[in-house]
Image 1 (cartoon, helix red, strand yellow):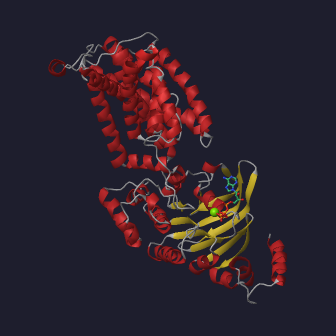
Image 2: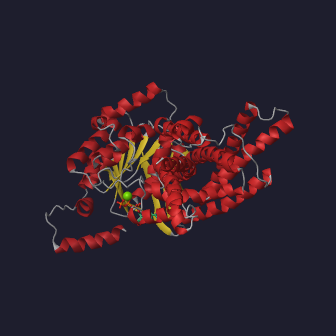
Image 3: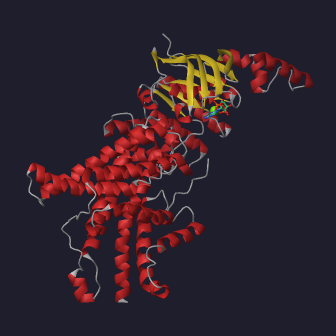
Length: 308
Length: 266
Ligand SMILES: Nc1ncnc2c1ncn2[C@@H]1O[C@H](COP(=O)(O)OP(=O)(O)OP(=O)(O)O)[C@@H](O)[C@H]1O
Ligand SMILES: [Mg+2]
């Protein structure tokens, strides 16, 4: 039983990291109907920029390496980089393709993926780097001692960060003027246009927010696995999460992430031995596929309100 | 100086589909002008060419000019135009279905820089015209009735404090009493708030009762124009668009007559 709980908790917490990546997809998909294939590349770019600035600031400007100032300055600069990237994407990729069918936009984001990946490595170099957040990946002592359940401090920290991020986004969407406009655009972009909401501004905001989410996700994934090219594949992990949770739902991304995380770990531990292991890699996709047959709009996907 | 004027505009969709073939019309300040015509005549296209929503549908004004208060507005974005006081209420209402009625109204104020108090004030002003919206303020717009959605769409436009509203088929799919209620409010807004209206309608009878002036579009051309009363009493209009004629029920002869007249009109 203890072992089961331990696996479950570990799975749920790693699911949080999937959810973070899925969240970036959902934001852009909701506001502009674009399935942004480049989200994974953005995660990589953001994390790489962050560690890049962390190296550059002490080396060039004489700030004390490892200090809080360097950390937060790097964070801000990396965020600013993502904002610039978002604005440039809107200007160079989305605006010329406005009114084109979704598949065209999707193809454009595939192209964007390569550009962003190239840009990231050109600017910061291609070697693997470590990222230090100062939280150890070790079991929480009292849980281990009293109940014999190993829960990683780092995973718990990541979950806390993700929860605050989601709360922040919820506040932004629900209570600010821009947030309301964003939801309006997601509902009916023509009507939004007709009342004077400039779509381009909204897209820029959304890409900037997605960039911020990518940065947070990249830092957490990077701290766990190192900042390396493999981060771009996190996007693929988000896919089953999206199918499960629905492409248009923020809560769906979270719940989907948790389900995928927990089920893949449980499957690996309990079903894996029966078939020779290694099912963690493909289990989420199979789950998503099965789900697609039952409920194609996802758990929380928005249904159309059909009444006039 | 004219207020809103369209001079001989031509509109093409997708680079090939010619829809408006030289439309000219005027809306004097403070008036209600009706734009009438059958399905596909080009009413919505005319309104969208003014509000510049055309480009989002791959349409383009290829000839002629559109002026508002002496300035050309054909190259402005919809947002700029809303800031200048011209706003469109689209055909089929287009409320934001997942937002509450009140949130819908608040989005209408997007282009305005207002304090919280001013925003509240605008909101109350809209509720004063549409008391029904106040009672449904927290319902999701997608689940309200057609009439309420039409009110919501007009109310949302009012939140931008426009001088001129381009109103596209407000009567669509609504019961006669609701249509009457909405047109009364339009008249009220015109009288009290000095909002000018350009009103696209298939419901010729009702529209001409509330409008000052009317244009009749057919196949992308203006085929008739005149004071609303004159149009209402015009025999041709009665026959073609109101389905009435002075001889009472239509006979076969009338139908032939109709065909002949129709050729002459187009
Ligand atoms: N986006 C578009 N692309 C191509 N053709 C279009 C487009 N929108 C409208 N049309 C065509 O332009 C013509 C005029 O359409 P419009 O919507 O302006 O008519 P309408 O008078 O508003 O009709 P209704 O009373 O049905 O609303 C129609 O023949 C229509 O098929
Ligand atoms: Mg129309």
